[in-house]
Image (tube, rainbow, N blue to C red):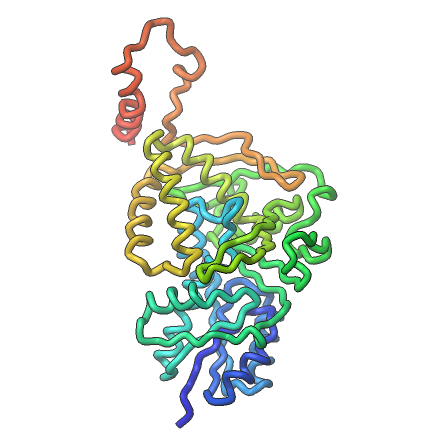
Length: 365
């Protein structure tokens, strides 16, 4: 009996060459993990995989799972900001998890992932963290898709062979989820509500995380927010260029980070900045299942107990500018901030002030 291999195919790319390659000595089962691609793209990659030799092509709708488990974790860790948008890294552990599940269910001996942005080292790490016995087969460079419209609810990878040159400017037509900031419409003001670090409402209307991100993504995209053009270091030593759009995610992270400044003590904020950077590095390297990431999540979970409130932002010209924030868990002492005091303050009193303010807040709640 021919060995089976499960090949994950990203929506928006052509899997034909990879399916034909693996089909030479394997029974290919294509897996489309739907993390927010357009429905016609999901259907197209499924049909294309079947037409080029896959014995079956399975579509798994994971948009809600992705939003509730991975997007929320990324927002609480302030990941996805400038310099590290985590596209396509954030969806990699979810793809790895479903690859392993499908391989176990169908008796496959190996897995692979067809994407325009392959990172075999990170994928191998992600799969190994789920099941160390499942083998990851590399996709040869000759069959890696050169172009496509690969994206998910968190962000979109801009794909254009010309972008391999780090000096070449991105074609204005290659942006799909963000309008040119120069042509942005009149400013929009939005208010995002968080409960324990989780975004739950937009302008007072409660939504699921998935729906809120989709609504905010469309609005922020009209103002050209969330464009990233950077060079990343991969684990195999290569430098690659990533051109990415994350309009909704960029606004969410900016709002969440600002609310943390209002509700967390100074030393907690300082420590969390280090944790946030390490968390993003682990996800970028495919180490979602690592003990360190779980330990960091436990720290983040503790910090989010008080991160509840509203953040108001002005969206315009490629920027999301915070114009106000409020919280019942605030550590902002209005009287001290506005009037100060004429009495001399001892070092001991000043040093104890953050702990005293936090203790009063905790006692009141």
